Length: 289
Length: 295
Image (cartoon, rainbow over all chains, first blue to last red):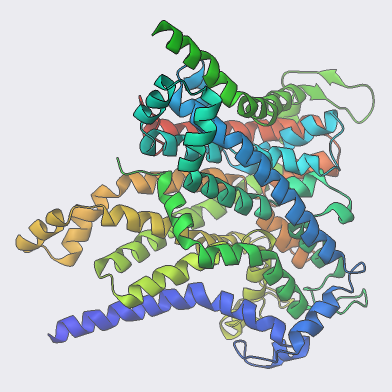
C-alpha cells in the first residue's frame, strides 16, 4: 500500500515536471507583453504586469516602418488563403482520381506524391528559387502562393479517405443509373468527403502560415514580407534583443513577445479548438500495420 | 464492360491533371533544374562554363562546410536520442495510467507545437536570455563573458531543447494512439503471468512500438538535416553570436544571396536533396507507414 502511494506520488511529480517544461515558456510568452521592458528584467519572471501595457506595446510595435506589421499580417493572410484555395481545388479531385480510377502512370504519381510529401520543404527552396527567378516570378506573391499550393499531403489525405471510407459500389450504382463522371464527383463524392476536404484546408493553412524559408528567399521587399519573415526583419533591424537598440524605436522584449504572440494566434486558435482534427491527421499518416 | 473501362481510363487522368501539372512544376522541374544548375560554373573572372565536377569540388573544399556539417551533426546527435527518450518516456508514463492529470499533461505537451517559425525561435531566445528568462538563476553561471548564452557552440543544445519543446507533443499523440491500439487482453495476460509494469513496458509495449521509433528518427533526421529557420532567427536576435553559415542550408543561402553563385548553391542543395530523398524512400518502403494498396 505504501509502495503504491509512493509510486503514484513519483508518477505525479514526473507529470508535473513535464507540465512545467512544456508549459512555462508559453505562460511566460503570454505574461511578457503585460510588462514594460524594465519590469520584465526587474520583476519575477512569471508575474503579471498590467493589462494597460498590452495596447501600449502594440502602439510601440506600430512605430516600426509606419505600422508595417499590419501589412505583414495582411500579406500572410492573403498568401495563405490563396495557397489553401489552390491546394484544396487541386488535391480533392486528384485524391479522388487516384483512389477510384485505374490508368497508366497512377502508381508513379502515387509514389511521387509520397516522396514529395516526406522530403522536407527546405530541401526544395533553392531549386524553386532558381526556377521561378528564371521565369521572372520572384518578388511577386505568386512565388510564395504557387509552390505552397502544391500540397501532396492533401492529395494523400483525400486518397486515403476515398479508398477507406467511400465504397466503390456507390459510384458503380450511380454509373449504372447513367450519371456522368463529373456529376458523380460533385453530387456524390464532394458531399461525402467533406471531412477530408476540411482537413486538407486546415493542414494547408497551418503549413502556409508557418512558411519561413520560402517567403524569406522569394520576397526581398519588406512591404511584401509575411508576418514570419517580417518579424525576423524587425528583430534584426531594431536589434531589439541584443540590449543595444540604437534606432530610437521603442521595440524591446515585451513588444517582440507581443508580435510573436500575434504571429501565432491563428495557429494557437486552431490548436485549442480543433485539436481533434490535428490528432486525426497525425495518426492518419501512420496507420497501425 | 470494355466501354466502362475506357471511360475510367480517360476520366482518371482528367481528375488528376491539375495536380500532375503542379507536381511537375513545383516538384520535378525545379529538382531537375537544380541539378542542371549545379553543372554551371560561375568563375570570379570570365565567362560561365559547364563542368560536371567543378562546383561540387569547390563546395566540398569550402572551409565553411566542415564546421557547418559538424554543427548540424552535433545538433542531430544531441537532439535525436533525447527526442526519442522524451517522447517514449512521456507516452509510456501517460499510458501507464490514463488519469485526469495524465490527460492534462498530454494537452500541455501538445500545445507548444502551435508556437512555430519565427515565434518559436524568438521564444527560446528569451528562455535562454539570462536577463529575462524564468530560469535566469540557473542560466547565469552558464553565460559567457558577454552575459549571453546563445553562441555557435551552445546552439546545438539550444536547438535540441527547442526541437523537443515544439515537436514532442505531436509524436506523443501518435504513440498514445498506437499504445491504445494494443489489445487489452495482451496486457491482461501479462499481468496474470505476474509481469510487473516495467516488464510489460519492456517486453510487450516497446517491441510493438519499434516501427514508430524508426519512423520518428528518419523523419526528424531528414528535417533536422535541413535546419535553417531557427539558426537564422536566433542569429537575428543575437547579432554577432551566431555565424551566418552555421548550418549547411544557411551556407546554401549564403552562396545564393551574398555570393550570387547559383552553381555552388545548387551543387550543395542537390547533395542535401539527394540525402533527404533517400531518407524519404526508406521511410516509405521500409516502415509501411504510408499505405498505398499493393505495398
